[in-house]
Length: 244
Image (tube, rainbow, N blue to C red; front, side, top):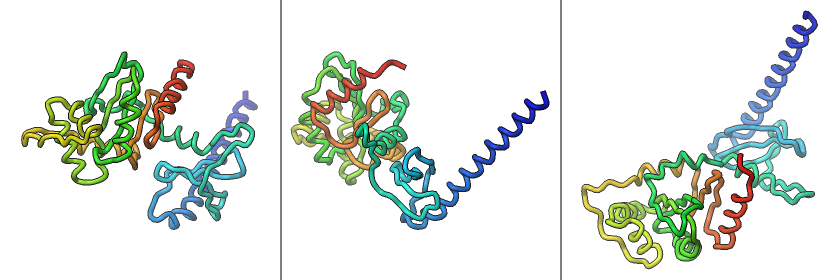
């Protein structure tokens, strides 16, 4: 019994020392690097299983450094044998969201076909890439439910257009009329309120720095416009995943 207690105490002490050591390394790296990051704060430091590197998370991105924070590596780490982009996989993982937590009542809802597949798209009404995505991929795809968050980050005029579209009698038609056909939506009634400010805060919380940004049911995202083939491939990969 005494030996067991001693073993537990020893294991606890060893674990505590390892945690203290890790905390010390993290503190040293933060102290060394943060003054050189233009005011950005390091969110976390984590030792990686490759190359003696430490992962440094900054503003949703990943950098790498050594144990002392003397060198900074900006770039992608690949597994040569599998050709996997380990950096991209890690960024995708840490930036995952819980799709069910999205306030879908603040989005336009469009159901195409059976609507079984679901995406949420953040778009600015003055974004050229968003218009291209809407005119091609999202116009061509079927059997999907599209939740569109009007995320106004390009100009004050974006807020105006989004409010006018939100307050239109048929929001989806007003959105498509503008994004696909270039038809300007009528001015919103003075009494009508839009979720513009709340959507902006949501997008900032989710670290969306550009539009379009597409979120999928598993919480992953694709930044930027993609073609129909790539979107279908993404849906196929979701269907192929084993249920948890």
